Length: 81
Image 1: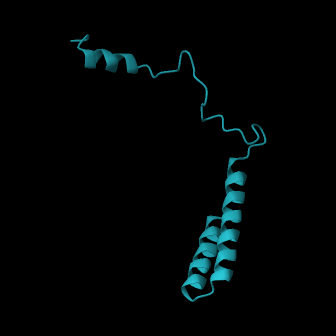
Image 2: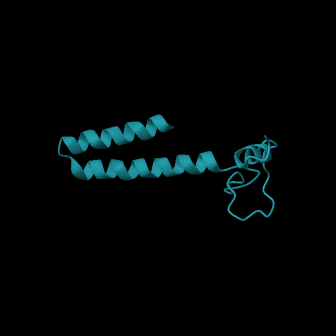
Image 3: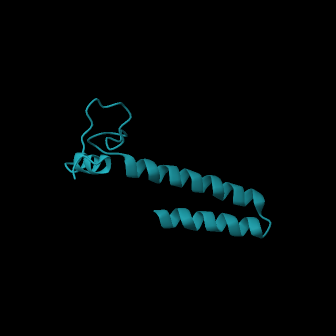
């Protein structure tokens, strides 16, 4: 699908280079539509819809941290010598 986006944009640039600007603008708009369609197709999940659960947008009171985080903090503060 990205190859189609690349091909359409390349064709638009070649057409613009040779002076066919109205046709090139049409291909640029078509490229944008195909790219947006591909993005929505990639992001959509039957389970979540268009929500992206891996992106947290709310504040978490106790965020999960790896086990070694507190050890690294203690080492940087000089508490574990």
